[in-house]
Amino acid sequence: MKNITKDIFLSTLQCPVLGWNIRHNIDPTPLTISDKFRLETGIEIGKKATETYPEGILIEDLNTTTAVKKTEKLLNDPDTKAIFEGAFLYKSFVTRADILLRNKSGWNMIEVKSSINDREEYIHDMAYTTMIMELSGLNVSHISLMHLSENFHNGMETKDLFVEIDHTEEVHKQVEEFKPLLEKIQEITDSPVKPEADLIFTCRKCYLLKKCTGKDIKNHIFDLPRLSQSKFDKLKALGITSIENIPDNFPLTDTQLRIAKCVKTQKPFIGERLKIELENINFPAFYLDFETVMTAIPLYQNITPYETIPTQFSIHKTSSPVCIINHSEYLADPQKDCRRELAEALIKALEDKGSIVTYTDYEEGVIKELIELYPELSEELNYIIERLVDLEKIIRENYYHPDFHGRTSLKITLPVLVPEMTYEGMGIADGETASTYFALMALGKYTDEEAEKIKKNLLIYCKQDTLAMVEIHKKLLKISEENQSHPEIL
Image (spheres, rainbow, N blue to C red):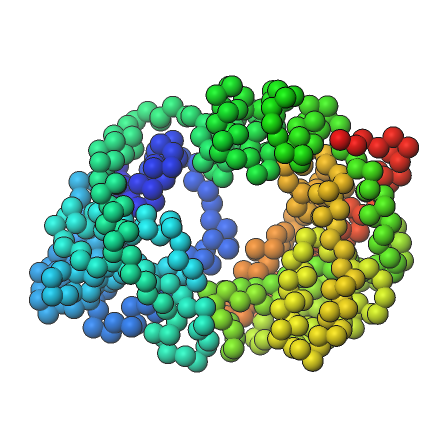
């Protein structure tokens, strides 16, 4: 049986079943290309963090026993000033410290994160590592978090990539809260029998929900958007896990009530303003979708960590919802920052009249960032913003289908409204994958032949998004016309 790692410990705190599953390697989720890229980025950032301490020694051994012995040897050597990836084992609990720095009274521990923000969850990460080190006999006198600086630009020194924050007091307080839980977590994760599953509020974000406490529940109460802890507790006390069983007099928000009614009647909600909102779209109409990239380590000069860089767009132009006039598209050269070129191509493609239909307000945010970057294009870009129409907002406020399960994203509404249109079998089928492939091309990870194939897949994917918007608009108009005389108004 493998050792109990930080992930297993913290997962068990959330849910005994989740922690047990991770330790026993049950239902492992395959890594996507985006997952792998994040892992590689984390490793790269860790390496850059260690560059700020050139005197440090890296423990490269993957074998826990060997790594622990090497760490102990270095800790006992007064000439060792810094240790990277030091390994510690207490009973069956194992951890590695990103950076350890010797001081007069003991050691400083630095946790490195690839975020630009300090987060409460990092206290838990640091507390686990500190706890295992201290139980192993190490005196940890100072604990800090090192995360990325939002002010870093390529060309600056490596030390400028990071910001360090002292969390000694908060971490030591958390350590004292963790210590009494060690024996219980050991008992749970060592057991050959999986713990009994109990529906808790944390389940709402668990990838195992449909295989665990949510098994065989078609319309889970977690499908209700913004379900609060207090409402969840009341429903659980009533033994209710399905929306169908929620009493009619149970207090819900208007949106939650709408969803509950649709589920119980198995009929869609069609608001009286659906047709009006759709007919307010002026033709010719342009259906716009951006793809963007944002990386921890900037890809280009004058870019900060996680700055959003638009890399491509797709535009379907229609003279009516049933008549597509043409399609235009743009894909940036991955080897350089093409935002100015993209902005100019966007202005030209969207012409000077007609509504611009997007799905969510994400495109508006991207355009606003382009305005800040290129104020000389502000008049044209602001005019684009004035013409924007958010199709998802229209759906969210005026239409709901029981099969939406509380969500209205494009990938949710399309298979319900236009089931014949699918992303199945596409080389790239989601925005995160598209962003990852572009980043990898920018980093020179592919041959010219491979890059050309990826570019084609990127264009096909983005084109599919805007075509999907056209088809959804068309279907919603048909629905609104068919129900105009008897709208289902909540």
